[in-house]
Length: 324
Image (tube, rainbow, N blue to C red; front, side, top):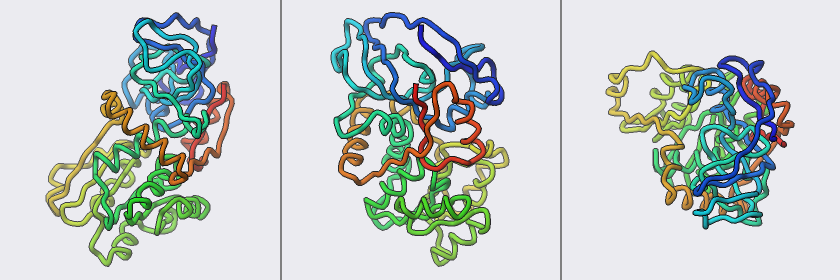
């Protein structure tokens, strides 16, 4: 039997409960992984609250990234073996001491990447990868705006973009978070609690605007994000922590011939080739020191409700992990 944290039904963090469940033997193309660290992300909140549709009627095991050790493999699995340190990102199922999953989602961890770091970067780091390598390919000399710059994704994005010669403007709430963002690659950081980010971006770009905006906030920022773009600019919407932007109209793009995309990580990771290439690049950047990963909050797996509350109230900085 293994401990699992499930959302009994859609709702607040009070719906998160602990249950014991058996872990079956892996099928031919599956592995059983014993978790050592589990990441916490806004996508978990989206599923818990019911904003994203559930694949089951009740008792949904949340959690979209984790690291651990392979304890059993199916007969057809050859790229990992029992005892290997591995990590993965999939939509749900990680809030557990151990689990079965399709071996195609699992990548081996190099010696220079710890389990905690891996659990903090598989979803967030691969998100940055598809954002800046596929959704809007950020080039040396570009100027971009990245919201939630002090969060787990934002902290990685600032460093990664800076390393390729991109000028990165960030937004964050409060002086402490702004300082965190500055330490993670952002050339300018706008405190949205005291400044209008649209006005400030136009000042910083001599009224020209930015090449791209990476926006995971949604309703509270989308209109002004569009206004921050230069002609032919690109808005990459990859989340909605403030709610869905329901007031948007396609005609809103016409004012500057703008582009809009709404990518999903798991459409990219469905390709084993993409997953291997992107995770390999991510791990190399961590090992080289180009990316510094900040795990600033740690909770016991059984205390995951506290982790959700901290995340939703924007009290977290950098990454949060659960420890089984």
